[in-house]
Image (cartoon, rainbow, N blue to C red):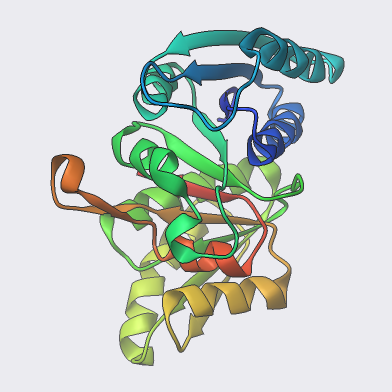
Amino acid sequence: MFTRLLVGLDGSPSADEALEQAVHLALRFKSKVLVAHIKETHGLSKRISDSGVLLQRAQERVADAGLTVQTVLRHGEPDVELATLARDVDTVLVGRRGRSSPADVLGKTVTSLIRIAERSVIVCGSTPSPMNACAIAYDGRETAQRALALVARFASVTHSTVHVIHATIDPAVGTMVVGEAEALLSLQGVTFVTHLERGTPGEAVARVIQQTQCDALFAGAHVSGEGRRSAVTVSHAEEILLHTDIPVVIQP
């Protein structure tokens, strides 16, 4: 898994952070890295960058790490083009847009990418993470189940401990929900710890991550509505991203 990585670069510091996380992940999985820069075909860009120089620097960084790298320049809508490129990779790494406002944590492009991509999207932190201790925000829904399957595969390869986090006001119901996660992880032979927490999911996850020093979070993306009016709720990851600075692996 994670043997083919896609990184979206736009010249921003957060995109550079995503590239560094991709290098760390690629070294661990001996991955091939595809670095893409999408030039928008309409509208005025607030950031003027030389696409050739941007991609060349990224290529040199990845190659210097001893990894196989390919670069691609495309024109169009960044979310659409990245989603198209994602069909041939295992996951997409992007930077987070803001760290002070819930409405700006993901940004429009990343939110749309999560909605339309057929692969997981890793929203990276400000520093590369070894992703040794993984948490999952688990609510039992379909996308959370897919995120659980992904983290189980990841942990079985990396020999990581998985912390299953569920926020609930009813411990009995919560025990039933996390019981499903425990069963799957047990079958996979994965070491895990479960956490039944009070409070909102965002608060609960952030609290457990701080207590356990987890350095990666897996979560499911919940989409409501259709078309351009659809909304993405990433298991309260927007709130979590405000309280943590670790990569969040979002499973559609």
